[in-house]
Amino acid sequence: MGKKIITTVVLALIFAALIYGSIYRTRAVYGLSSPSGESTSSTEGATEAEPITDLVTIEATVESIASELWVLRLEDGSTLEVEGRSLTYMASQGFEVEEGQSLSKVGFYKTPGSFEISQLTKLDSGETITLRGADGRPVWGKGGSGGE
Image 1: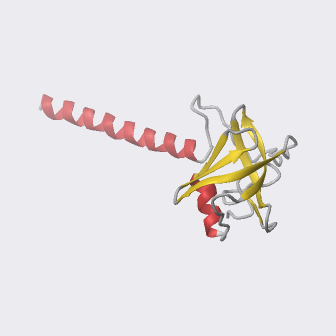
Image 2 (image 1 turned 90 degrees about the vertical axis):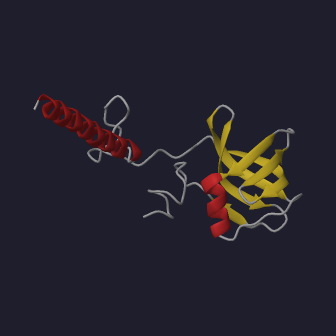
Image 3 (image 1 turned 135 degrees about the vertical axis):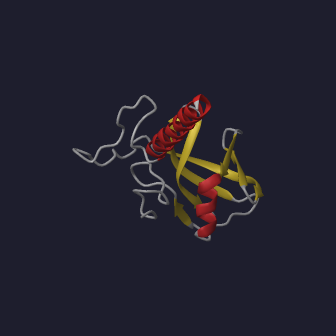
């Protein structure tokens, strides 16, 4: 009898921990709470995100192209890798580049050393693709022109 009670209590604790974890994770994924439990998103008194005002234009040359990574050589000799959702979005929009092609990037520094591309332009053809809105949000995500 004692074993059954202990087993039932242990299973109840495990289920409670799983339920708590799933709720916590769901809230974190959708930005409903921060890890400390404070609310980070609220519809009451919500305002539009401020536009990014520190936009920088940088020219680059396509150094290499792979299916999941573009490497761009910047004017100062450093490199910038384009990968992930940005690359997937550009491919879905038919924006393709070739090795050696010159590009102009407009974007902003999210943190020092972390450049976020807002717009990419092929200098030879003038073809342009916008990756982020004026507020810095990706156009394919929630709140962007490509999201729901």
